[in-house]
Length: 270
Length: 304
Image (tube, rainbow over all chains, first blue to last red; front, side, top):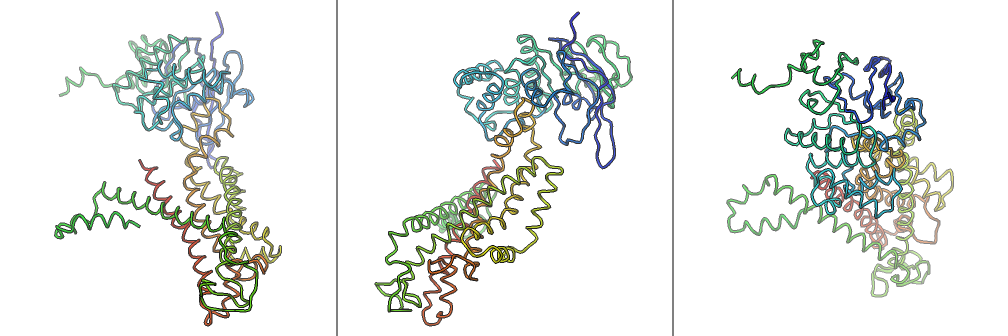
């Protein structure tokens, strides 16, 4: 069998602030195969976003974070890689979609210019071809009249539309791995469903692996093949999505599953 | 400030004076509209003043009726058709000296501020974006400069280096750099934490490019306002230093020097003092009005 696309072993992350060390990721291990979709579920502060940023080697906010262990991506250890080599991987091979589409786009640049930048960074295309590709991408993620909308600024887009743009940017260089860090948290429920369907469709069409991070089991269901449940910096349970839903082993997983509101239980209560 | 809009309000409410006070405390949208038009009015006024000043300064040699350094027998003559603002103690035309003198003063101010803005932007971006030790070193160093009163520092530096025009420019640039750096650093601190900066990093863009394309454009509006404000301060500083004899050497005219020379004959020929004083006020006011206009306009744009 082939080696997994992403193989993480004994990953630790700790913050140092005023001499106090707090360990937010406590030696976790996981794998993602090519084309596989994997979900990470857990409450706020359980270390799932830090894990995702560790894979991208993006220090979350402060630079006082220390990451240990090994992250092997397609055979290379990302943690020991030169910064310049890492820049070639970011965006080109591993791309990321962030939580808040309202703030993730530069407000003073047009949508098209931002997607152009992303393509221009990693692909050798002429200016005209770049814009053509941008328009194709915007079309791919379901933005109507993409050629005209490419000249609009982010404030002329709704939250859901901006998230589509960010997804377009993320998939523009056809990465091997797409990390989506709570991609639907800032959106309302109907838009959530659309964005998830879009991610699912793009994953199939482009054959990407997907690392979906969320605190909502409802998002995980139907999206991923494998689930890792994180709590307090550790992976407490993992397994196929169906078996985990049917037969949760860990009490925290059961608590999380119970936290998802169900229509029938709501009906019973009232 | 909001003459045009308030005038409009009084016009429309003339018939119903009773309703006027109730309508006066403007509700949300009205208030905002008035503010915006006030800002635009200020901006336009500022730009008009700036244009007048620029034209007079640039075309000075053609506009000035006399050679500003040429003396004549009729000293301290009052205003006449030949000399609109009269002549000074050694018979030079005050108007010509004002026009040509403005060129020196404004040019010094302009170059000095350009230097201060460039240095301030560089230090502010560096300090704010990198943070940590770099931030500490840069800001503490600037604090030392900042701790001196502007004039004291300027006088000390000019006195030490000698009162030449390049020294004057350098001094003023040094004095205003910390202010500019602070104005830049503040917004950089908040902008660098914005998601779009991290998003840019996540697609593999270099730090230098991130600063240039994703941080700098976000901090440019406060810099613009501060630049205008600093220009007005600088004009004042230049004239003050010239007044104290630390400006460009005579006989070439400059506003501060003219003021200083004319002050002894204030009672006999008041126009020789009023002229340069008015010019200084006009130039200073131009940039204050411009700064306020810019602030109002950019604030509104930033809020929507």
